[in-house]
Length: 382
Image (cartoon, one colour):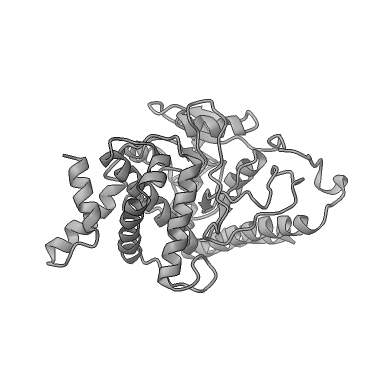
């Protein structure tokens, strides 16, 4: 049924205007994501014969040989880790290299508007560079490959993506990376938490799945949203890492949490002399919670995240209960990366978001929504 729907959606997509194609595009990805969820929900309750679903491993499975190669731009810690998770078919493009045009142009009409909003025409193009390199890489891509973009950067990307007419969950994929890689070449460590992961996502209890050994206690926070969310998740799951597949609303909620974590914990750490993440949880928990709380409230209002939602997407309960849940989750994740040092990096993409909120409020005579942050960031950047 999935394949029949897939084929019919493709046929429909080429018959209508670009606005119709956008709707078909969203429906296509929804079908694919539902297929992923249903398939593994079923496998969670029954062990199918090997002849039906292929060889099952009792431990972490090797990456599938059918894993099509990705184009990965950037060979840092995360880019290298993603390559090592693949089947050997990936093409690495280093930060200062141009992506060969032969890898990008797929068929005729590569720059026609009629092709821009339809289905991905090739493998994922994962941008694993620093935020400041995003523009040059994206501008080098032809229009028909923008749907294949997978962005894994930290920070608030919304204003930049809006300038590029990119919408995570619609015409590009965005991923929140929570697995840690200490140094290039090291095995990634999943950022697991024991409590609620926030957004609802399926984590099968069957440990024999061909996506890796996923146990009920494995509750990683990595999340993906967009055309290649399933493709990205498959590679991580095949290597024993968790990846949640979220819709746009849930992803924005998760994105705010990641932004608050990296902005609050790094800032507190720097003001304490560059201490490690674990030291903050152990010795400065109340201080970091106070900072994170005000950033959550200010950020939620700025990007329209409902902290009192009860629709089952992410947050349940009143605002106080939700805030406690988020703060506990951030602290628990921090313990997973307790040995990591703190530093202020890419400030304009991270803390800069909250600095802009404070400046905007001051211009119109309103009180600062982030007074603790404003005091600390001035001290840290002095």
